[in-house]
Length: 382
Image (cartoon, rainbow, N blue to C red):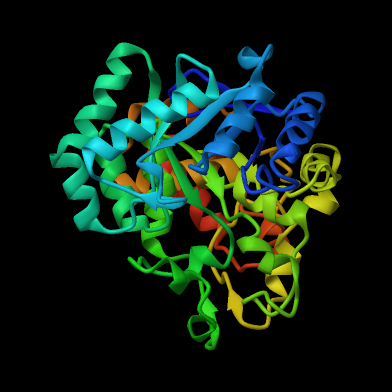
């Protein structure tokens, strides 16, 4: 298992994480099976948005004797009321839900406390200006929450929250189909067939800006919906008109700026193993570029997907990394010091490009790579 820095938190998290969708199955006995397997596989990060007390209690039991082996991302504002899940902003309900969660998990702290499911700007403003954020900050001051997170499907809302400087970790839905969709307060729009009827071209700019801003500000992204609820794995359901593999979906998410871990929504030990097998997959098995290029309804024309199909470069330039830092600088309108530092430690730079054009002949998306290398030299000075 490979591990990545989760933004600027100092936490090192497994590239493959674990969602909680399968915990409730078989009367919650599945929780222990999944945690046992996660430990064997080296998975150290999991998400717990579920508020069902039985699920939370089963997680608490599964963590006994090995709490230090797992990093918990759990959700504030996800509560259980009248026998069902509810998202609440009522501070009394939020506090009671927190106390119940901590008791059932049998722990004294949560590593990442997620402000749950913020998809409208009005909701974020009410949180930021009201008692919920004050409560979460108070929990962090006490050490009950080590880092403050937020979960969202809306790039505009997520961007606003990230720019506030309060959010250290963002849980966001990342996959190649959702990345084409503009912001909406209705998460169902991400699935809606009508939105994929035409020929869609290139990533929504707000999503691109979100990923790049997170990278620049040191906000780690934990990925949900990498498989689009399973739709992307099924040609008859995929909005792209063709199926992707588990490895391709995971690799796409992990190659976006700021992404640290993909939370696999496993319903069984076998499904968790399938996701973890990404770590042993070959470059060919991970490769999503040629699949994307063949999609009948979607095109990423001229847009660098950081897929590295342009390699090898005769001057050994890591074109994907140079382009990523170039995009980060262009998005900011200046060169942040952290971006400059990361660029400078690259063994080879854009200015070394000899304009042979071999990279452009291999790029499935028609990216003007030579021009990008020229711009990198102009912006970074080498």
